[in-house]
Length: 445
Ligand SMILES: Cc1cc2nc3c(=O)[nH]c(=O)nc-3n(C[C@H](O)[C@H](O)[C@H](O)COP(=O)(O)O)c2cc1C
Image (cartoon, rainbow, N blue to C red; front, side, top):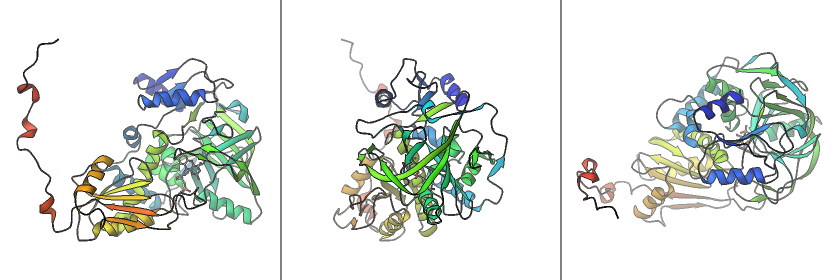
């Protein structure tokens, strides 16, 4: 599956290929970072030391292309993706269909996989594009979510679950009952599964329902070898095991999404019972905090906020979480004085971890361009009365000391009822001007 996709990228001339032997300790990440400076094309490492598997990275880094991977209609992505969330929640048909396990699946062990160490102070190799599949211990509803996994040895991984995530809730309930939580790491999946795993859905709704809506058909799954978890037939690599109850061991430091090292902490332990991969499996590596990480978080977070806003307020046009998912810019058609303030309230309530900054603009401002957003804020009225500060609201999930707490809102709309005083200036005839009709060409040299 991944092989066919990588081949298509190569045929389209989009794939960068590294044939040279590359060290998984730092060198692979360094080459990735250097290539990212020059653009966001996917990179295939064909010869990574210590493993037979090829490694692809930067696969979903191009936000524009990423969004095109899901079959949403024309128009703003946030609105279209929000309607996919509605469809997933309302879905009555089964989201998965049982199928035989892939014939070319072979059994292996963790050290067969590329063990990539990314940053100087990282505690060890990490799986950064691993999607954790687990079933609700009470209802059996499958959940898919990304959680980085630290490699400790052939039989053990350590995971950071994050308190607010569904997987953390599943594990808590299993732990209260004194039981292991069976889990499988999926590495290398199709775009619908990738998107769904990055999306937050309400309790009781499986990410498989969203993946099925995005794919336009049920996700084909087979019962995993160790705990019969429903594993997608398209997954390249599957690591099966159990998250242990009442067990926490040191994990980290790790250089994660915000660009800093998360210090070592006591985190969850996964005992590994089996590793399997396709005969031509390609391992997916993801540089945390790069565009590949942020583009997905921005897209899905914007859709969730759009949906929350649209359910409660009029005049919502679009939402963007550029240039990073901790910011949310909302484009509105102002309906009344104080409209932007109400928007901020909904945004701040939309997710406990994100939306630290909320900017509100009108339709004439490019909401994906933070320079334009800030320009509107500082030129369209008083900055003091249109800044909203909320103290003491919980922040990013890894925060233990309120370092990311609080919220700031910037109202960059024009004062309601005084729009005429802020008409954006225009030069008549600009569109018709072609410079070559006017400029005298200087002789070369
Ligand atoms: C590439 C990527 C890596 C992520 N890594 C982690 C992680 O290591 N720990 C974590 O708690 N959340 C991580 N997240 C965030 C969650 O997995 C993600 O937001 C997911 O939607 C949560 O699912 P849930 O709402 O079903 O709990 C990551 C997200 C992405 C896109």
